[in-house]
Image 1 (tube, rainbow, N blue to C red):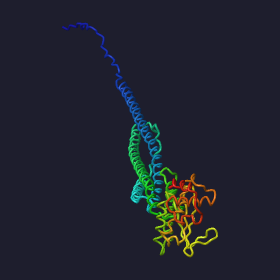
Image 2 (tube, rainbow, N blue to C red):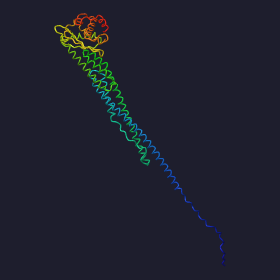
Image 3 (cartoon, rainbow, N blue to C red):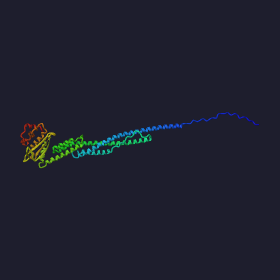
Image 4 (cartoon, rainbow, N blue to C red):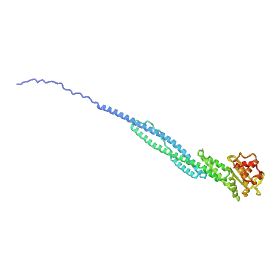
Length: 391
């Protein structure tokens, strides 16, 4: 038997559909974030590198300003030092003539050599670079950092160069000051040395002595041209010495010792009036020739400026008859000494001048005829008394 039964009913359920998966966008977001952060970091690096560059440029430019100032100071010091060294050389050369302190001249010469050496070191000058741009020429941070490093290196080099230049300038300035000090010491020695030279050349003429004294007084550390002043002084000193030699030569001969004795005696009573002496075999006075046949004669010219000075001319016979001729010599000194007392004597006539000289000799105790009484007569006793106040 065959049996057929319909299939049992099967419960129908909907076929499940797999849920659609949402596409994730994390990589894109991360990329944007990374790019943003990278951009920010890059911008920050750019800002920092630019700031560092500007600071380095400003530092270098400040050093450039300082270098320019140092360069100017160095050039001025070198110019001043060069001038001072040349002047010192000239002064030191003049010091060798014997009219200044020898040690001061040696010191000045040595200081001038030291100044020359300092000038030679500083004379190379300072190489000042151009100003650096305050902003970099690129936006690429590594390139900016490289440029910044170069600026810093240049700044270090320039700072060292400025320091060396300043040290060289100071060395020149110090050496110049030392030369100035030794120069002043040399010039200051003129006063005492000139006094010694003046005294040592007591036979020199008044004209040469006045020129020497004037030249010595003109040597002044504050004068504008010290080399010229010292040159004039040295030349005047040489002229004084030459005059001394000429005057000593005039005294030479068999009467030398007596002539020297006459001069020394006259100067012992001249009251500080500067006296020149000339000697000759004869003198022509008032149309007569004196000095022959044992005659004695003297003639005096005197001037009231410069404190008073005179030139006494004597015949050789005055020396030959020394000391018998003392009264005549005193009479001549009496002419000279009236320059010391111009208000006491009458200078209006030749007779008044001779009366004064005769009275002065009498007042000095010389009463023999050689005092002027033989030639000009007795002076008033009142004049003799007045003359005694002039010594």
